[in-house]
Image (cartoon, rainbow, N blue to C red):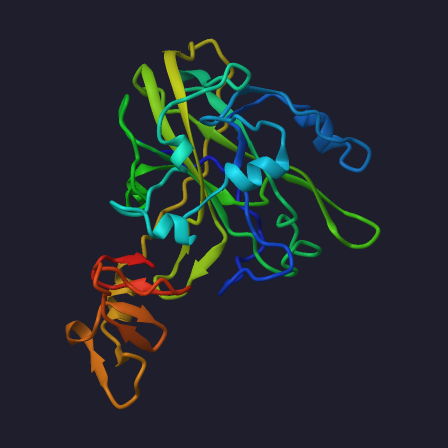
Length: 316
């Protein structure tokens, strides 16, 4: 079961080829069960600052509250060389988040089936179209994937599929962001809501939060790039006497299968050479725009930005 709980911005999504600016794009999930001054901050965004309080954290939050240390040691970028060159494939979680480990001061999340949690993540200057960094760029989508069963793990990035998605929405749909006097962004906080199914099994349930900042024109979908892994320990379920939760807005998820097939069937230039055109299955699997290349000796596509592996059906 999955429920899409995020509200979407009314403005149209703008296609992003690459997020390139003086401020690199990155974000991570800061808190799974946020108990900060949400209402006060939303009501008085110019005069109020975030007072962070969290009842449940992502895995292994050893540098909790230290933004510099977290951006260096906690961030997991699926497009990085470190992720793409791992043995066994590109992992969904940071190496320090592949076990359900929680320091004493950053405990795991405990909840009931049917409960709605408010998740908080960093905007890092990317939340506003008008003054964000990069300027005039849609910040993309945030998502939450569930492994689907107690004690089951999402191991590889290729397992982040639509059937596991439980929540999806715009990066800035629920955010407090201000413009400073020098027109630089001041993102105070970003949130999304996750509603647990009423029949979610008791025990440890594993999730992956992702930010998809890039629109993949080849596949026609937003590409997950940054991830944070966490667990929710479920016990009991919400009683009938509790106030009903707001009905989630369901958004059909398109994995882009039809467009991928169409794109991979198009003519391309073998080895990037116009003198050697090919089309369909006769072409090498690694596509970069109009050019296509073979796997290297390790069975991998060249690790260049913006490519697509037609044989494996996934971004490079």
